[in-house]
Image (cartoon, rainbow, N blue to C red; front, side, top):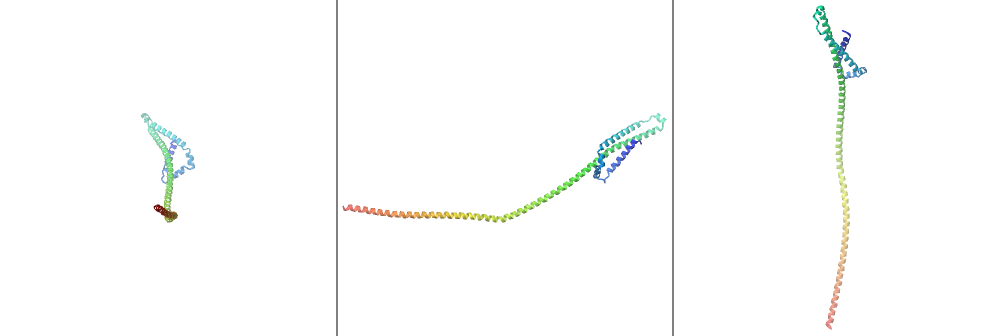
Length: 251
């Protein structure tokens, strides 16, 4: 086996070993994530696209060369050449076998190189998703705790409000008689004031009635006096008229 095919075979064995290690179930993706983010891995991964493209180019060239070799040694050997060189067919089959072996090695190495790259990216994504999932779970737990605390605080506030309302109701019940008493006292004072005012008005009315009675009595007295004087004057007039009529008869 020449040097380039030794390189391809070594690459294939290395890829198989790395894939087997990456597929170990007891190594978590977080561990691989820490390894991928280490200083050396970060330094290597910063130029990974260059290595990846170079390895792909080398493996593709070697694979195409192996395909060409297989195509070359797949042509049948002439009968004359076989009669001249009996070992020619054996040598041809040996070269064909080596070409096919190299083609399989190069093909599998190229295929596993893509598999290895894809597997590493999936492990890194899985580790990131696990970290995000844990962060989301912690956030949800903290949100649940905060919500429970808010509900408890709300329940406590509602209880306090109910207690305050009950105490306020009792206070209003105790204050209600005082308020009613004050209202009654005010109404009583107003009633007393109105009563005093009514008494004053009644007293004034009585005074007016008494004055009117006195005026009426004085008027009646004056009327009686006038009637007496009128009767006296009438009697005098009648006596005077009677005297005049007697004088006329004597004459």
